[in-house]
Image 1 (cartoon, rainbow, N blue to C red):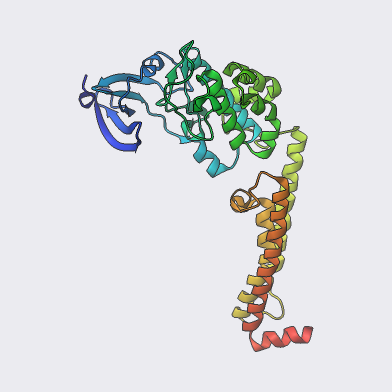
Image 2 (image 1 turned 60 degrees about the vertical axis):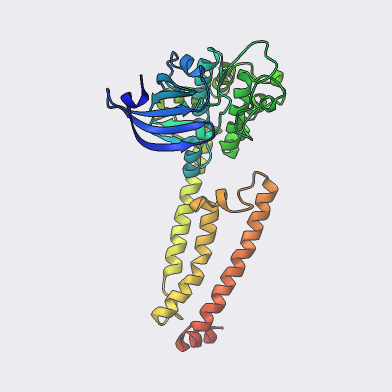
Length: 364
């Protein structure tokens, strides 16, 4: 069947040297689908995927051949990829990490059992949709061939690809497990990364012989290490943790919440105090200049301590993974804060009204 007879292309999504991706509509069912064109490839693994039914994999609806290219129609899943999610919400906590990675292990177990190696696991190829993690984009995948020395063609994304994908040996299920561990290490928050350190280490060992042998072993360790979170995953799914910062006990989480509330109250009271009119603020201009100086004393500490505007994730030094560099960052930004506040104070003093200056000078 000709692709154009069955599908209407709605819009292009992306194109690379490997192929192109389009949003399309099925003329028969009127469903929105993803239409994938893979250049100069048979892509037989998509026919194998067509027979796999798993909630963490997109349904392959149809596989067609068009001269030298392969055309694949697959389920359209509305959501955002893991890379986008972390940029918007910050690194994953333990609950969400366990949820995402146990679901991905289920997807990997399903494809590995059919001899398919994904070879391009990375945050942008993990889709999050309504509490469900879905592994997408199998363009770089291959069918495992026993006895082969190494892969014919290098595929994968630098930084996530296992060492053997660079030509050292043939990729197998342990190559996907390596990439999964890299994603886990990169996107987890510091507390979650520490909690998951043993699993990450086993996933990302340089020698495949030292890694987990199967994805179900990874999920088994996650379930064993975090049984209460695994139960919560089954009941709630991704991103629905009742206590998303839980790494230790519920008591520790409650204590952190209480401290955060106390800090909010403290900074609120401090803001009210700062906004109260002082004797030297005679005119509206005096009041405005004065508050520009005094509000710095509230805004900067609140922004850093409370993590407002996610300052810890984008400010140089503060976003480092090394503790000593973050400490250096705090010192540097504190010095910068005092310098900026001093400059604001000098500028305000230069533009105060004569009455305000008189009151200030008489007070000193």
